[in-house]
Length: 113
Length: 162
Image 1 (cartoon, chains in turn cyan, blue):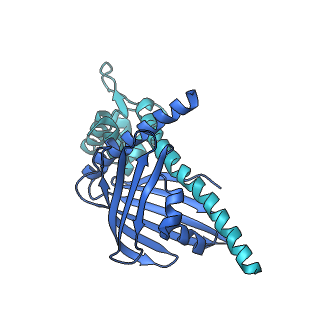
Image 2: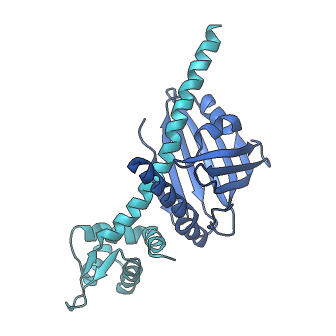
């Protein structure tokens, strides 16, 4: 799996998405997160491991509490990918809009006859 | 029209939603008549759809193939209709045919479900692509889809620069 795939897999879990939303408000330690989500410390830690290896968060090596921080660059890679997919579909759908307008017009003229 | 919305509701699914300013019978026609379908489902800028064959009944097969207008590279999808409910739902399997473009989307076919829902003369279309496994979805993400996209974007850049 490349990092983008890992990020998608990491984002598929609601708790991990919740952690990211929480970290968007500021750095937090494992203890903070355990308190906030009412989950056990090992559960939170395993989620953090997934998020960290996907590049979605980083953890300080210096401070003793090792606060977690959101890595917005990797999140941007995910949203960029979704945007690309969106652009391709929207391109097709715009052509479909035009085709449907044509079909509607043809139907109207058919009814007039 | 409000632009298409793309989301990833689970770790092996991509969902695309869009509304169209037309009654469902016309949208259905555009999705089931191959001659109409190939006019809009051209995949990416700079590509055309030389092969669009499909029979829309349960067990019916389809074959779609796209060609790069510039270098002639091709890729496609094939599959079988699993469910066809007039004006409301089409579900089919989808197997990536790498042609000479290459890439992989995993071994197992994915399942594509398109639902149509008319309200006040507008038709809402939801397309769900469900990969057989997370590994297959990852394969699709990292090869075929993204490579194809990168390429077409490079071409688009070229066109804009020229």
